[in-house]
Amino acid sequence: MTHLNESSESAPRDEYIHGHHESVLRSHTWRTVANSAAYLIPQLHTGAVLLDVGCGPGTITVDLARRLAPGRVVGLDASTEIVERAAGLAADEAVHNASFQVGDVYALDFADATFDIVHAHQVLQHLANPVAAMAEIRRVLRPGGVFAARDVDYGGVMIAPAIDGLIDWMRVYREVHYWNGGDPDAGRSLKTWARRAGFTDVTSSASVWCFAADAEREWWGNSWAVRVTESSFAAHAIESGVADLADLKRMAAAWREWVRDPDGWFGMPHGEILARA
Image 1 (tube, helix red, strand yellow):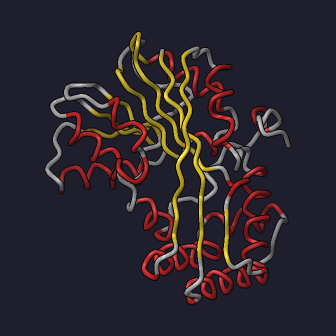
Image 2 (cartoon, one colour):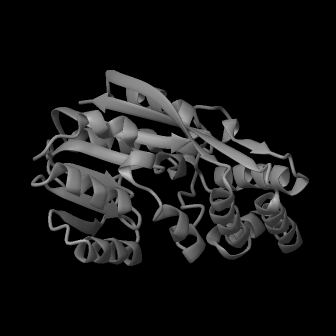
Image 3 (tube, helix red, strand yellow):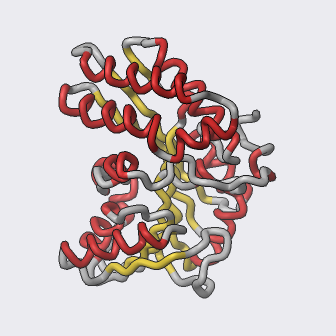
């Protein structure tokens, strides 16, 4: 595989590797603008109209809506169940300038030049054709509008201690990600993909998630200990032939071992871009 994901751009599969198991949503609902989109904060201004592509359970979307009020924010996701959950969060939080709808990033149901900002967090890594998605995003941006994207780069993930089961997890995760048509190293390719999609003004940055404190290890590691055997990731690993159930159980045990180790440390680097229409 190339880092530019040229092979996966024509892959027949285009599936979300994790699915929407509760263990997955548990990690997604932790996300806020501060911990997942800090690079975008200088671009946010009251009254802006924003589209949040792949919004998931809506925690970032609702946070963005608070910051942009009275501007309008639309959260878009492929899952009806997740859209309903996100809309419920906005209602519970009394955030009235955010709405949510089911949609397809390859065929956005919006007129040209509709949005000041389009945001995509951890989305492009899962797409079989990220360049086509970016081109469609560029279509709905107003002149001078900003496309903000942030994706992890699993090629740079750092794990300590180097427990065998976690090394196996990393290998299996990458292979399943490619099998699904995505690119686990998407963070490093965002700039290239944006330029291919027609953006000419692209600014790049990077940031890291780090899970090391006792509470962080417990939350992150136990989430993955469940996810590795019960989420769609497990089904995809078995279906693709990359791992069997016994392998996945060993990985789950390794995650729990990592949680218990006071020296446990996990770093996830992310690539980020701000691309102007």
